[in-house]
Amino acid sequence: MPAYLEELTVRLAAGAGLLPDDVRSSHIDYFLSLQQPDGGFAGREGGSDLYYTGFGLRALAILGELYGETAERCAAFLRGKLTGRESVIDLLSLIYGAALVEAAGGIDVFADLQHDWRTSISDFLETLRREDGGYAKGNEGSVSSTYHTFLVLLCRELIERPTPNPEAIVDFIRQRRRPDGGFLEIRVGKRAGANPTAAAIGVLRMLDRIDEDIREDTLDFLCDMQTDEGGFRANSRIPFADLLSTFTVIATLHDLGGLDEVELPEVAKYVDAMALPNGGFRAAALDESHDVEYGFYGIGARALLTLAQTPDEEE
Image 1 (cartoon, helix red, strand yellow):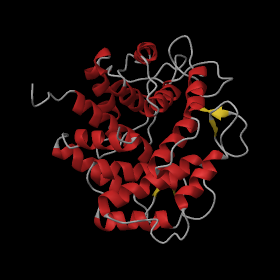
Image 2 (cartoon, one colour; image 1 turned 180 degrees about the vertical axis):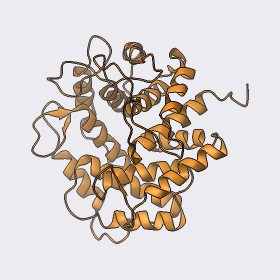
Image 3 (tube, helix red, strand yellow; image 1 turned 45 degrees about the vertical axis):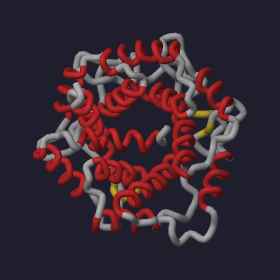
């Protein structure tokens, strides 16, 4: 089975390649305009960081624009982040960003490292393992997180280091399952969410542990997250949709073979309504601002929807 992020990126690139040229061009210009002088990408406030740079790299990669000077500048930023202790999400952004730059631009960000950096990262990740089988957000955290367990497994796939005792992770994820078919982010949580559920399914998919019972219950839960706007909400208490939840739900429905169980044209209308005239996307209907993260969710969602609604050439 291909690595999770590798397979997703190929799928997103295939869908993005089917978008109209003018749509692609506006979003390409948008993402290129957000690259900072240091080669990285920033959020709505502050300077470049690994988190937002990861989204910029992913967007440029699926749009076929991660090459030449753009890739070289990104690589320079990533090299400047090789030292120091990073969070799991920063580690993932660094490792996956480096993989994208190497695949698209032929640049090895880790070429000058003298030690076995993969083993060092693997050892660090295991310091986050907790007794319940999951992984915490950081060394100081005592509570395992569904989302950060997902991130750790993604990191391990990228560095090609197997996860110790995977069955304990499966047990941890199943303990986060709620009667409504969704999954909790932390054990003491009261309500399942679309994004923790997507992370849980991602973990079970990587470990090849999705059974039919989980599949059916999860599909029911995710379908219930669709709002009258057409997009998907983060949980049942939130009355409006957002682009992050919409992207993760669409990707998860694809993984579960359940895209035909929701109204895809309505989802597409919602995603298009979040698009800005000159490229990029808002996070939600009430959000007037924009950033590279939600730009990625928007173009990613549009790519998945276009791919899903394009007839197979063999049909």
